[in-house]
Length: 264
Length: 358
Image (cartoon, one colour):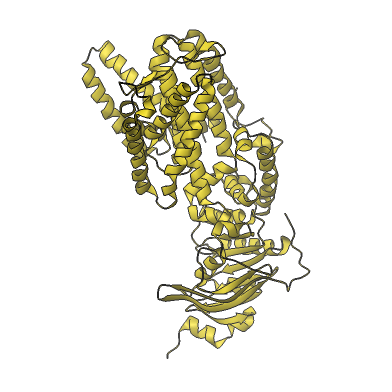
């Protein structure tokens, strides 16, 4: 797998400038700006319905914001379809597992490498030349990720029969298979027991440190967020209310009010 | 020799992703090919060719086609009969317009023309799913059959409104027309069925197949990964229609010899192929063959037993056939949505552990 250089850690991968997203009269996000630096783990937190998932969907291209700009790798991103954004090497996992249930773990992860598959129809039809070569080359990358996530034993198991925690891990694997420049994780720890959470935390840290992948994650478990994240952005009612180191954010009065409620 | 992986060491990824993971499977496959290519042509007679083997192969090709679309890509279609008609009429027009063109090319070209028509009728799939798509493809079924009846150009202004195949030969062997030998009829269908099944296997294990299955299983996640849904769905429609078009061309030129659109390619055929893949197994190549075999053999068998041995009334036997097929569809949908192919897989799973199942 490609190692992203950690030297320029302050270099900004994604800059979100003044993004506003409306659904009819409802404002899901209003004038939200923050950036994601190369090699960091950036957490997006906030109470339920704050607009965190909408933010990820904007980054992914599912939603197009009415206002604002998104800069990725130093370029302003034009309006793109989600499958085009995949080619910019932004990968993600979903809050509710979105694996391909009818396929094996290996096939799911091979599908994650879709953007690297370029062989033509005839070559695939005959399983000759580029199609076969490509399959082997990509299999090699996928096998490294399988090793990395310690899921060798379930390689050929259909994902539908796996326990929840493993499915989450496979989904992470599928996202990693794209060798993403930016990895988005939507509640990677949701619904897990403590042991599974610890495993997942370790994998996220390993992905970040060993592979050097930049990660943006949404998570509700504050303990996890404070431990994992380098920087935290807090969103409430579609507005950014705090941004900074975990310790700063934890003691921010706005954040405490947002989470605990405040009498007006 | 036991049926299991033990002792088979796979040392490369191409080897590991091969089609047959267990040696006995591979031998079984070669054995069936040997029977199909060598033994049957030597033993075949007119009854077996026209009642069982040729229709089986033709329907198997149609099932492979529909299975690509419905089983792998998850897009339901009730237009199979209409697409087969496109294949048949294209083949007829090509054969009569270019008498010197080899019939093999005519059949392949008919497949390509059907692929084009399939793409056209697949466009609604980008907006609609499930039942609504089924209704849209149903419209294509009726429209296409109407088209071929309405414009006499398609049947060369023949008085009966039927199309009948001219005599054509490949390498000096007659393959179409009324005087064709049963073994030649069988061989040409077998060659197409084998080639297309092999192509289908290659497509579905590669990146295009994964693209289709991803679209079927979770289209949102597929899009995030970089699957262009437009491309995935339309390519499934195109390739599926290519297969179905070839099945239609063979159905007309090699099997029946003379057809009329309403009768030969009606809505019944669309349902027949759909039943084949449901009973055989959605998303399985073996299932396409098992399903076709079942739906072709079952009526023949029932008729032979009820009418031939027990001397029942033929009408009762036909009704009984409808009833039992209906019941079987319901039973399979409830208890085994993956069809007979899944039962075969389960059997193999059991066999791997035999004789110590714990």
